[in-house]
Length: 446
Image (tube, rainbow, N blue to C red; front, side, top):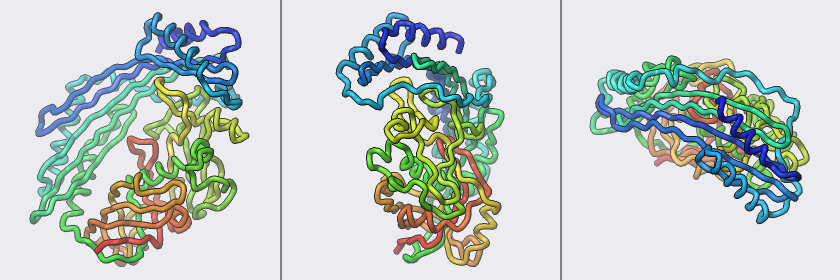
């Protein structure tokens, strides 16, 4: 960390009068291990560093980046960004983020044990994960993949507008995909565990989840078409929230890619639905003390008790929409800042998934979906995706179901939410999962 800030400051010191300059320097280290039948199938240990420079002059923006922190490369990158600015399109809303008085939270996102842990111990975790999954049920016939992944990221960002921040964080997770077989039928299930450091990883839980998900779908049948109440499993809900988050950025609204455009302050969901984007929550895999423009991360309530409360903004979209940044700039060193939700979750309810199931007479627990991103129109809200899961009858789980399609619209699904579970589960992605009950969804089968 110590060397990144001086490097960024050095580049900033080369700024000319009248230039607005932003410099971000990054150093990342990643480990990915995959095992198969107790042996290493794939091992990657990578280290990358780089710098991105943004220059704004006369309402025109130029950007350049390089995968090196050598001094001569830094000077060339700044010169290239200047040159690119001369070809930019004038835009009165262009400008750097400016300090807004929000204090940067102290989240303690870095753990030395990620780098201190011996490579052999990381490999052993992946091997143990594979072994435990095989032992989880006699019907487990194979392991498609068993992975250990960790990352360490350090960055520094400085600008002529007065922003100067440094960040450092670490994360790790294990994930496994199991194959189950019975009477000629083969099904797949996955499990995972996420932690800020390897000691927080629960290999036994990941193995058990993978075995359960695979075996409980054995003998799946295709049901008749009808309207049912569904429960999204937490992993499916996380994917659902990620789609919603994509429609709630200022950029999506400006470009006409959001069904929520022109609906600020309106009731857009059930009163049970409160959607929050909170990268200050340390439990979130994507937690961060600052956003991609160096502003403090903060908690943003996007939908509050069913009412559309705010979109997420970076500095540019905030200016364009006559508001302010919500600390939601997203970027790498090789790109200019975009905007997006960073750590989405639903305010939980009070019931477990089992209790939610017990209250449903005729429904389906949706365990997995296929093609959810291609099956949703973010403008019209049309929703249609392939799915698999378990029938619910009289408050109990029944036979497994396959080759079904669930269809509705996002608007109707949000309005038909009946309950939110208490089982919030942070995944290795930008949204948390939770069991979610939605009524009156069309299930198409045979």
